[in-house]
Image 1 (tube, rainbow, N blue to C red):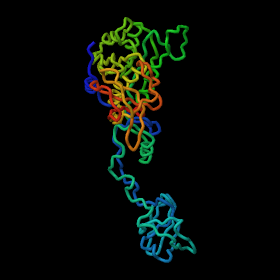
Image 2: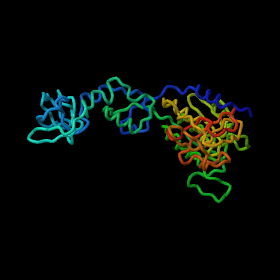
Image 3: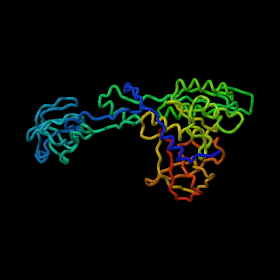
Length: 403
């Protein structure tokens, strides 16, 4: 079988049209993890007026050299302070309070002594001390959060501060997941046949795409039954934007998926890529729907899901990128196992601002070893032109901590 170069397959994937990003509005309380469908622009300065950042006394800086300064009263947070401070006067002002007119500096409570309605200065502070200037946080017209950002805790806080009750977000693409093969047992299913194995692919992929912002339709498992697989694919096409199946794409007598996909009326974009793991991957399209038929081994199906499924979901959501790629330095020699583009589970560490890659605890074997992706692992990418790599060689690494 002729295999497509990895870079060519990615270029073909990027060229696929997924249509316009669909948009909906949700309550801010339901926006965590969603993807913004519009830029968030500041409508005013924050703060709108000079604000105290500590508890103290709002004064004129030049008055700090006086023997004492008269206290006019208190200025609690939330009070619309209108008094004007003149020479030799101050107002006790609390954290978050609007600075009184005429004051340019706040001297902290612990720096003064209060007695008989006046303060004496024990320790001076610099001009403008503990005063938040207008627009310190952001200025009117600033783009605070860009379209395509996945909303996290900080975004929630900023949106709340802007009184954004409803948030415009991308509609979650629907991803249907199915594992095929008569040798697999679904979660909770029991068998006295020792040749059967427990299915993990559909649950791994469900978690991966849920984390990436998709709505996942879990279809479970199905045996090597041509008619049954055909029916489940047809049903999935009616309700999902992307179908992801594992198993049935190799060259065996019971590998039905590779034959069923074209029979569904889907156009095969490509089949077979020079990658390790996952060379038997098939990507197909029917109208605005996509089918990813992946190998059955756990590590292989997970890696190919990331490489070919996450970019489609990212495009449908309007995200900047499906995952983060960094440059890292090899902390040990690396022996390449094939002439393909390889994706090798590795450990990532940071020292003096530099990422390092090592393979401590990673098992070498088949594409079934999913445990290699535990413990905050990453994927090291080696090109088909690469051979064995020496320690200190710079490599590309896909981080798996965020999608």
